Image 1 (cartoon, one colour):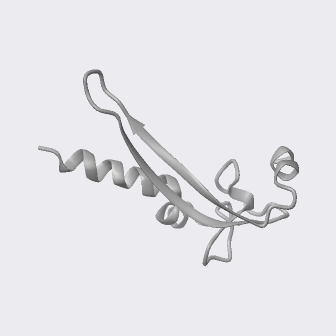
Image 2 (cartoon, rainbow, N blue to C red):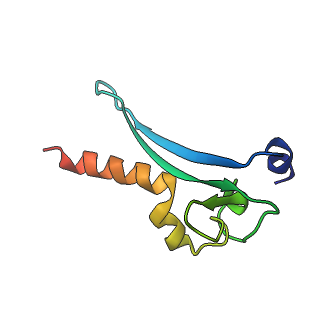
Amino acid sequence: MKKHVTALAGVVAVGAAAAVAIAAPGAETEIFEGRAYGAIEFPPRGQFGFGYDPIFLPEGHRFTFAEMDPQAKHAISHRAKAFDKFVKAAFARP
């Protein structure tokens, strides 16, 4: 976390993004992206999650990702949004 704190010193607001790329031999590659917007908050707060979760405060919320119940975080996370798009596309095919 110390590395994150040093690297992000002075940052006011950021967005987070994740993409899931699926490729198979002989098939097209597709990219599914999800975004979560919010702000960087110091000091780090919370015990759940990993990486930037203790310092990422999602827009419209008062708890960092690391303070949220994992199910609540999953409902709004950038990874969940990207994966939801992947699942919908994968199961929409005949």
